Amino acid sequence: MPLIPYSIAVQTAGAGAMNRPAHIIIHRTASKGGTARLIDEDHRHHRGFAMIGYHWLIGNGRPTWGGGEYDPALDGLVEQGRTEEMIGAHCVGYNGRSIGIALVGEGPKFTDRQWLALHELVRDVRRRYGIARERVLGHDETPDCAPEKVCPNFDVALLRASLPE
Image 1 (cartoon, rainbow, N blue to C red):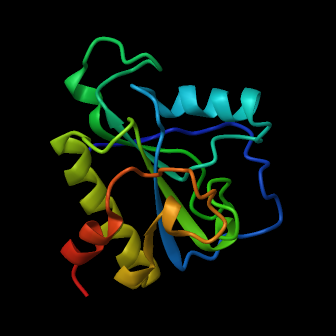
Image 2: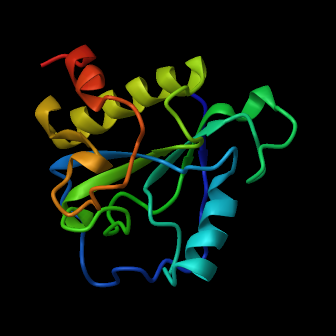
């Protein structure tokens, strides 16, 4: 799994509080493309966040919001947003007790490289925190998600079923 740390110089979000991951929440960006840097800028400027809300982002090979020219080096690339110790800003009610992973794209058709990277990343996060597969959730499976929201725009139950106990 290609991995690039997206280090952010000033990590002030959730200063003094620590994330205690017991869940993994899967998201989509609902864009044609993007990178951790673009999403960080969007979350800062349009949502008022201190930084990108997700802990991890999995690229689809398209570097811009509108998609842009396909770059295979970005397809399945895992970029770190917030450090895992930081409380996320991705899912009301779960931010202080989860790891947020976003797939770049609109779904439900993500790339093969994204699916592979997602499986590897989820497996790694589950191992490190002892997270049961039943606690791997789609954003739209959480109680405080708006009923009209479709995120991550695929059946996460199928992902859960493919994970080892």
